[in-house]
Image 1: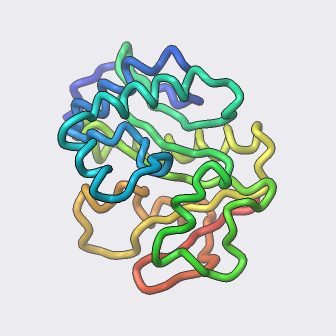
Image 2: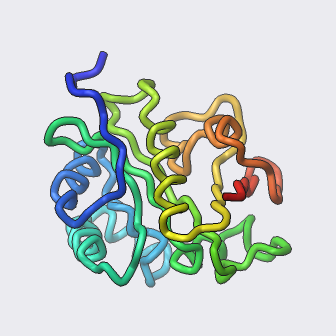
Length: 198
């Protein structure tokens, strides 16, 4: 049962949302604060940050949300004074590290620098608010925001599987993308790239 009484508002994130968004990451025990795709160090350095200095990622997220030059960065679900959901969406070149990951690295026609292509980098819903449809609302808001930002297509990278736990759905549930008209652009095993033309 939801602990929040107000209907959620789904909208593009603003700098003013930073404290409540960082609190969502803390409530969810998610120390990344959506900085992994921007982190320059190796995997061990990232694991050290998650364990010892997650506040560095919180500060980076706050700074990024204050930088208008970065353009669209994501959308939030807001209920009262709380952010209860987050979806990262931005121009694909800003997520070059995502496109460089196995199994996506080397897929034909999948360079991060394609003009007009935006990518969904992650999704997070407050554990106490899951299974209420918030991710669908976030995706709808993300697609609307991408259109306003000039996107011609949006790509998503969900895992494809039936028995995935919540911790494996951090790129969003596969089915909601299919419901919203995404189609498989390329795939290797459980790692499809889904695309929706706008």
